[in-house]
Image: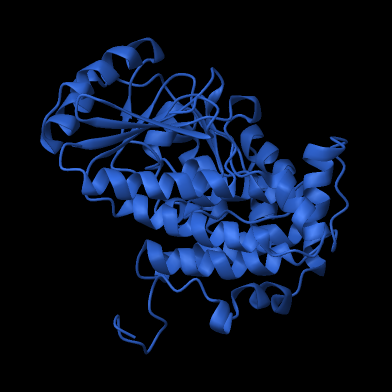
Length: 359
């Protein structure tokens, strides 16, 4: 094992450890890492001596801050297609993780955002700590939640997922548990003991039981106390009405949510809401990932993603100039084209309507 590799792999007991190893970039995913993870899962599944997989992130700051969006911007500016190839393999990896036949344990310690959610929250045993900050912040860079994020958020209780998708707000351990993004809270100081105990497990059932045994009650979160205004305001049919309800609700937190949303990319907001509502009607993760690939393909060709990454990551002036700049200027046609079939460029994880699973 080369300790400079972007994904490290070793075995302790019967657990195959996979470590995202770009700590200076907060373990942001690139295409090479996605391929390495996919290969590692193939090897772990085929190895009868391996009972489970454990995903961690190198460094002290978090599991993974998402995809390498600076590289995505550079690719878009150059008129390339490497990002589409990256997403194709990344979304397939997300589906692979969700269907992995052995326990897939993810330590979601520290920052877990965007693509980091994709490689962890689809796992079967998802651990958060008091340091966890879990988010899908794509609307702030002119993009839309992907990596199965719209599938996860659409399944959250009430309208919690809509709130998190539109605002991009990060949540801590209790709220990640409430929203179905994680399974267990383990204090950060208990992770070493948990990992050691997992190494002693010889069956999948022992893996699950060990995680449960090390779990503790999470410190109180924030979202449970806001369910009233969240469910009432985000049930509206349009982003404009959601913002109006939030601004007029009277709760300071609702007003703050309205202000947060209005700073995001208008097109991204409208496409995100439509993606979530459609995801609730789609049949499974694979169909949602197919939809997300269509949305990502169109967003990649637009200007907002380039501008959003410039404002947030490159120049860091936090002053994006969205096109269009106002929600009212985003038409139904603008939204609908993000969901149009891609023909032979489809991701193709799920059969299209009217096709058989063999077709």
